[in-house]
Figure 1: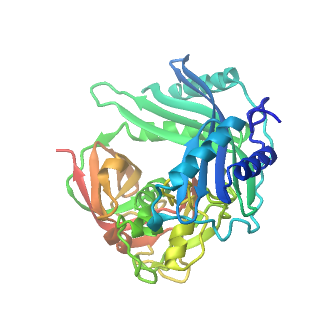
Figure 2 (figure 1 turned 45 degrees about the horizontal axis):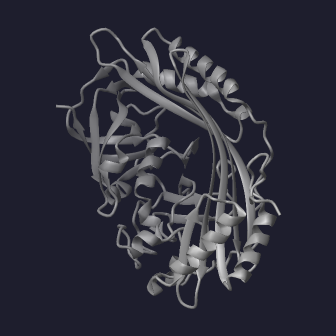
Figure 3 (figure 1 turned 120 degrees about the horizontal axis):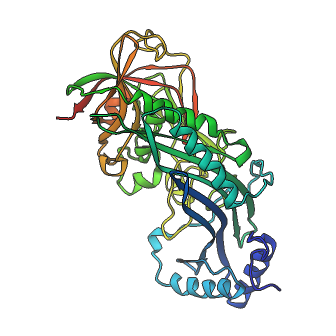
Length: 461
């Protein structure tokens, strides 16, 4: 038997060998109940600066989390040692740790760990060398700088290619395995005009492989944003009609995703509580779902850390909270089935996969005249939010976030020099006056433009 549960040539997980080793060592150590989650990834990435290589990276990462149960408690250990000896040592450590486990916080196997899963396309893709990525990124940097005389540099950028595998196996017969590949490019340029402050803007593109990566549109979006920010003005502190771009609205919803998170509710870290299901928390024309299996989600896995199949789930329908995201433990507490959103660790985490915002077609918007294409009203167009981690208090619902955007008057866009948007997420969701019909795919989910009235904007003093 080989000394590693990965393929020695290319670093891929070997699920059959993994399973055989786990069964063998569990019998030797008299362990009846166990499960394991493992990942293996290969990544290469490049960064450039003024036509020269700034940083070149290549890495291979392996990780494994093993859970072992004694009669009442569970022991958990993690390791990056995926050799035969590493597996056996991890099992010994986990069974020792199980005697110190918390009986009140004891996870179990997911009831859906052996259910059929949706098979996702995982076609093999061509591996590219760092030299190839470097040439592509150098060219992209040059094109962006040449797009306008005021664009002088691209201080933050990156082109990467990654390949990942995941497996989940348990002693009850569950056996999951899948792989995916992903490529991404990030360009964040800086423009400078005489006697004016430097302006910056960026864009990102993600796809399943390098050949499908839309680099040209990433360059175009970044340059267009940069040029539009050159003509900037200060803005007065006041309450405004706001239009969130799809990217900005998804940023905000993701920042408050604890509203849909059953683990956060149990821990008292959410605006919602166990009785919130069925309550109206937003305007009636807002729908939000989590769709990890959406065809546009190139980073989709077919199962979560506990082996539960990934599922598309409606969270808010017509403004009503109708579902939560669950792990096995939270689903058991709420008396429902797990939803396929769990991690695997000492305390199982829960997180969304791919949020999709849409308009409820049966409900009329409060203001049907609004449109980013044709409206003549004055409004603030918010393109990107900053300082999410420090500016959001998710358990209280409040936020105060710097943003990039424009003030739009009679269709004319003028960049805002510097400003902060602040408010309460539930009030914001109930002040939505228009959800546009066209849904736009971004790297973090799907959303239309969303209009909200009476939002506080603080201009730079």
